[in-house]
Image (cartoon, rainbow, N blue to C red; front, side):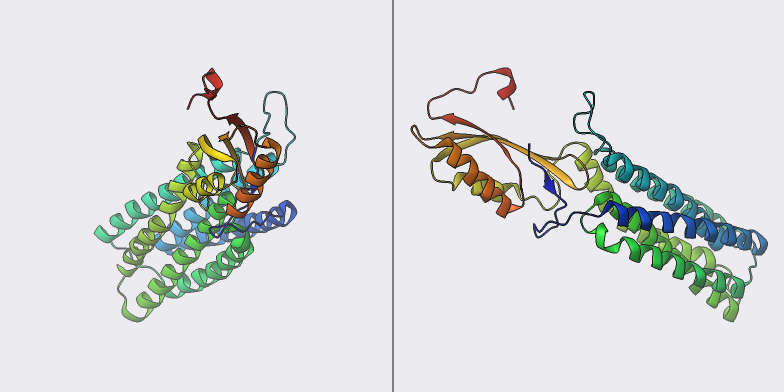
Length: 305
């Protein structure tokens, strides 16, 4: 069974360091918990929808980071007779949950912001700006911790997008605080919150689509199925192929199987090795190959599409 480790769009591979990712997640959880407490208190004190919604979004991120940490730990668990792949696929489940949490946060921000547009409340723009400035520093630093691994692990990408989204929300609150301080236009608070919500929604949509596709055993990003087909059929001795399947075992590992038809008298051991080398160049590293000679019929139940 193929394990294609941590691929990128270009086909290069990078294995994440669980210890590094764990440290980054723990730092993110601690920093965001502290900031949530400070921001929520300031938001309630100043009656600021921008601060309260940002604190709520940060709290949802703490939950998401905890889920991501749980997924990293479980993905390293040993295999068993009941779970022969271990718990690797929980990383896909968590990335899907994180996308849903982000979308739910967007919905809450939109709902509350519309209410504030209809019924504006006076807020202290200066306090908003100071708190938001701290939020930008905390969220941007946490996002930076995840930046490298987010390119190769969908689970970490979910955590990274949460932090980037929070940085944008904090930047929006900072902008609205400055506007309110100089103009007294209190509607700036919910207007900017709505704008940021739209940006978060757009950035989350790709994560949601990728998570759903991997949950349904679709072909992962970075795996060009046509390139794989060409690589297999170009191997000397191969006259045909069928039942090619590529899917994700986790957010960093993929699996592939294929049946190939060979010319009679061909060296099947050499063909299998050539296919594995060809697929390694195409982005797949360890492939399970079943061979059939010309004229054979693939008719048993396990050979059905």
